[in-house]
Length: 365
Image (cartoon, rainbow, N blue to C red; front, side, top):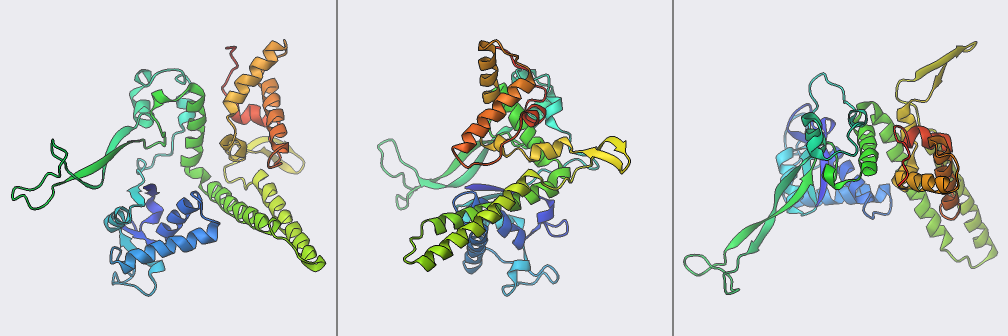
């Protein structure tokens, strides 16, 4: 089953009822990440699933104003959280959970700087507060029933010998409030650093608007790339059809290039840091949050592994192994790989040094 975390914004006026529209959007994101053709198809499929639940009387959407049963405009309705959880298990697809609430009047405290002295330490040597954030716990969850067998391999039956005995089936999985998919001790120091950066970016409320912006761009990009593939597979039967195909592909590729450009310069939603003053006023530089948001390559390349390999290569050639030199080498490798693949504009060495190698130092293996 897919785990869907619902935050405070998904609930109606601090109640125990969830907005149906928000549930549909959350399901659509899951479907899009798992094979749906595009954002719009994912939305349609999500609403279809919800409608099936209503028809089966597993979901009962209410009007948020009158709290009366509402089957005509359930898109703006609400359902109780407990009912939503039961429906997710009934359809055997979704595990709805509530997002852990932060302490009152307390801002998110980034993990990365707190863990700076512990990347190579086992979990047992971390301070207790950090162990609670990265250690997680093993959760046992009910998923269904199965028939029980006796010692002879036969169905075990009730006292009257009439009906088979069924036993509950549970699954166990690791769960961490901070988003570590595995326990701390199962990760390498490089993986811990990479994951801590990612968790900080995803959980800091200051980045919420930027994350939404980037998510919408990903959806747009995916839809256009699928459309391009569809037009590329067409076989025109005449000169006019060939011209139509050529014009359409040119239009779509132009839109794709524009989206790629927007990826390189997302809106700066974090507070800018002053870098100096000139005649035109205060000059600002992008914050570290903005730099991290632009690192699409982090999701597709093992930057720290590449950095270690680049450092080893530079050392064998008796060249400098500074973070800047290693950053340049990693940027060049990404550029060469992209030329043979998606042909995206990769990062420069300075960006790699500042965004990915911050706090890291090359050590010969």
